[in-house]
Length: 153
Image (cartoon, rainbow, N blue to C red; front, side, top):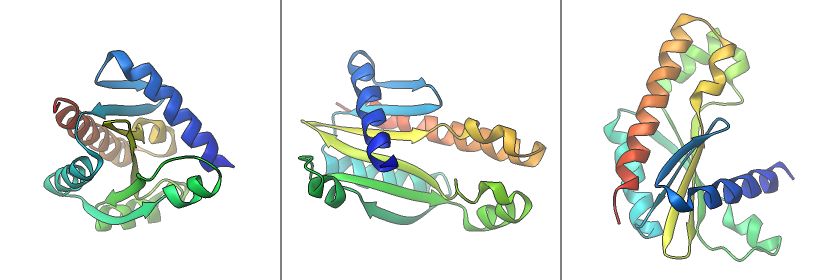
């Protein structure tokens, strides 16, 4: 059920983006790009790697949505992070385990592709200075990726 809530939240935020290319609202970061889904997926993974992260997994979400009656064939979640950093921070702050690795949802909508992620800043209250520095870097990197993806039309 929480997957459906996340999907509805993504769609609502997507509607809010009709007048802008990228947005930050209620701890969410989102961008709409004119790239096709395959182009955006490939570019997203390249940009994640260029920032020094590892794409650990790409999970299909569309199968469950289709079985629930939604008409979508392109919906994925990209999991990424820096393995050593994740391991270290998870040991120091076990409450982070549910949030790591970081995630970006990507799905097709008509001729556009939309990318959505939780703003890493929502994790600030879970740790000290070292975690705060990592969170600020994650937020900056994610914003850079979304900004670069959003300008392509």
